[in-house]
Length: 60
Image 1 (tube, rainbow, N blue to C red):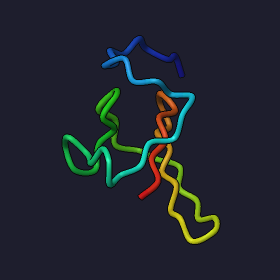
Image 2 (image 1 turned 90 degrees about the vertical axis):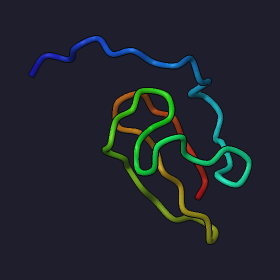
Image 3 (image 1 turned 90 degrees about the horizontal axis):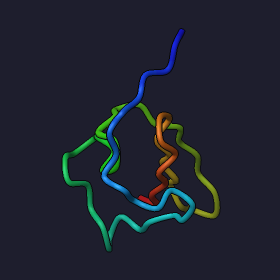
């Protein structure tokens, strides 16, 4: 499967954003690339959501 180029909005994908400070622009979609699939994990009582396409992370 070939990876196509996709447009991003320029968010820094090396840091983890807090949902309270930066809620979703469109519910259930990545703010950076508008993708709908995420990798999810729970650690220390926090739910971490990472976009499978661009890697943007948010603590929910």
